[in-house]
Length: 308
Ligand code: CP
Ligand code: NVA
Image (tube, rainbow, N blue to C red):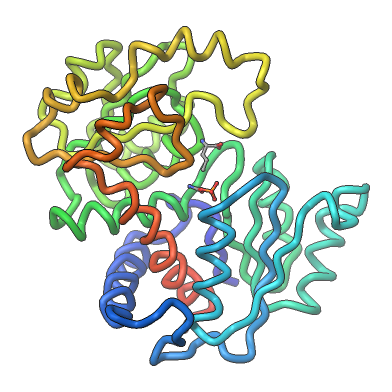
């Protein structure tokens, strides 16, 4: 069974093939309307369940459109509407869904839900975000960087703010795609040691720099994300904002990165909080290409999972 649970759990050769495949299918669709099927229809006769226990715009729409472009069908399920949200075990849910659908994408809170789903499902399971990681996002981010600037290997990525789930998948990607990552943020919000250790063991230079002005020197890519993630209690909002305010990505900070540095944000963004509108809408920002590439990257991930 080929699941897509995390970037560090997928072989680097397969990851490279996913990014390359995503670029090929993106280019092949140039000029086509969104509802036009791909020339290649690997998902004909396939039903894909998309389960959401948290809100989503990009993940929901890009998976749905991606499956349809490849000839398959989807059903979008909300966790709270399912028996899963009312006491049925994850293992039983996984076994039942495997009798109806050919693949499961799940966005959930606790990573253990994803892992149990994968353990008991007889069909591939894809991680559509947990409290700990967001691998589909970072596959799209790697694709986006390479689309604009060529190979990401050896480049310097600077993560500004909270060492959260998206940051964790960036650390996994640093290990697998061989780039360097500098985290700049308050010590209380450092990424987990295990994520840092894994990337360092793989040979990536992972640095922690409290001063954002120092961190972005020589950066090829600057990345921000929300200061309050979906799994964070709203009661922590004020404290988080106070800790993170000095890590805002603004024009002054971007000027200290390399002149050709890109800016990325997985979105949704909170304008004038973690990033200013001037940066989001500026010449270095590739945020909407990044959002579009979720579609292309995930199509390649689904093909990888189904061996197509
Ligand atoms: N970036 C991302 O995963 O967006 P959604 O929460 O809208 O799916
Ligand atoms: N870190 C954010 C990412 C949203 C796509 C969250 O988990 O809410």
